[in-house]
Length: 426
Ligand code: AMP
Ligand code: GLY
Image 1: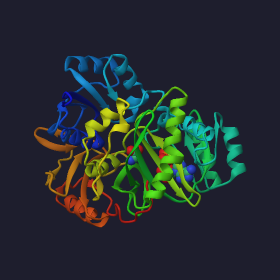
Image 2 (image 1 turned 180 degrees about the horizontal axis):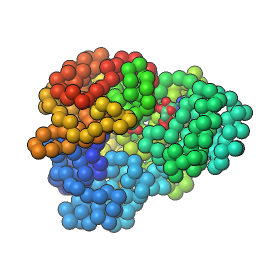
Image 3 (image 1 turned 90 degrees about the vertical axis):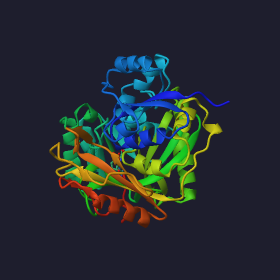
């Protein structure tokens, strides 16, 4: 018997959601795909709907009116705000963690305490709720040292301080409210030396299924210079993770985390995205995210051969042991094109032209675009994720940059060295 087809609502409107929508749209199990709010790229494969996703009642009403059988939540904010809890309480199946399980991303202190209790390898740390104590600890430990605001700070709120003064200033900035509520508690932790990589695991509360590896480039400028961004590019698979190391990450980090979350009565269902440092002492957890990365999702979806909808349904229904994920041996790489000025102030509304159509080796995912009088325009900081595959990372790079060259958008810029250094990621 073939399973019934279902209507799906995808929450989000960035490059990650365009990649998810593109992949969901290929599923034989899909009836209709809706996306709130979506974007013009997503609009090619889904019906975009202008819903206020922070109004959970409105989302539930929409799901009932359109007979939505499954909601897939892309970004972290609605997860931390409990959208999945409210949907499920209303009898609507949803993919993503409960608010309680989303604490793995929503509170760095929560995650650090969990690691400490269950011997999950991570940087040594202390939590503080006032500046004098935090500063005393910083002085005791010395630089380099890392200062973090506890809560969600949109990719900001972490200072890797090379000097004592920088660390002390970071403590002040947090407690003086630079990161709002997120900084009312501060974590000071050991600086880890090594290269970074990300491991993604699909989780059903008990079982974890590897959903690929990636590395990304966080800094705005070539050679990993300039301020941090949400990510200027990524590639998959990660160049610094062999199978033995991936197995070690699963057994020492991911699986114990799932067990710990289940034991405290808040099982983790969703995508667990582990940001890792490969240190001389083995892989250590830097942080968790409770969703796919953006732009990491774009490269993972290019390599995924299996039916994404079936995998996400299996995770939300506790059936991950029954399914497998097949991956292409190809490498995938994405180059983010951003509006000049990003991550600082930038203008919206510049026209985007040139070749945006997909081809055999790649496609352009829309991150921050809009349609204005029939013209595609930039509508955000990160605007396009120009994504390609290749037999090797080098080929994927060449294919992606050839696509970048075919886009006509003078107000946009990108890094020229995505995947060239294979070093850092975040
Ligand atoms: P996070 O938001 O926690 O991922 O931190 C942002 C970035 O800061 C990471 O991707 C790392 O590059 C860096 N970072 C965070 N924690 C540490 C640490 N303990 N040691 C070294 N670098 C770190
Ligand atoms: N690219 C980093 C993130 O999605 O958090």
